Image (cartoon, helix red, strand yellow):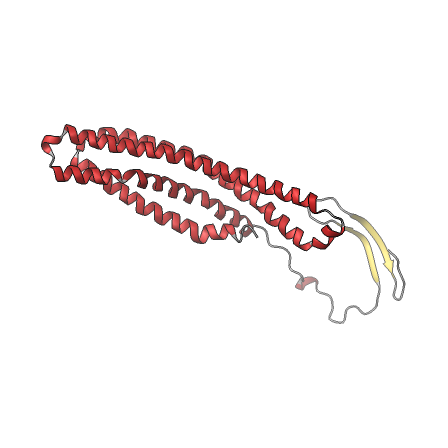
Length: 253
């Protein structure tokens, strides 16, 4: 349920939206940097280390954000499964007066998911503060080089450059968040692909082993060295059963 609800929402809605937001803000940032470089070419000396710092924050945040997203998605599945089990067994729960125990168990699942969610939210705030600081450094560098180059730059160009530079803080934050969200939402693709790559179950019927159309001709059941297990990797629950049940014979198990 989780993979075909929340994960499919991420694949069909969030990933395209993240890519659109990243592309728009990336080109906005590029235009801002070009305006700054045209107005104050020497500012490239300061912009290069600033953008290296920006890339460092982005990669550091993305590394942990991806893992937190994976943990958050994994911790959400038990909530859906537990809710479904409780709905199916509500009469049994009431009969055995197990409401308190199951409420505590539900709260445990919710608390686990909430801890991971707020850890991801805190990481988002952490990178947001540092990106605002990085954007402020871009504004500082631009204004300093405009002042140093005041004799060769007009007031209009200086004003245009500063107005563009003031927008870079917000767009920088959205570039990182949208790209990081794009990477983390790819976890949903990975989780859904797990189901796509599962081996197919055997068919209900096999044409090469189908019984005769007149079968059964008599009510006789013969087990010969019959063994059975629930899954291939588990132990046998029935081992080498030999049994003959004749027609019209009454058998008690």
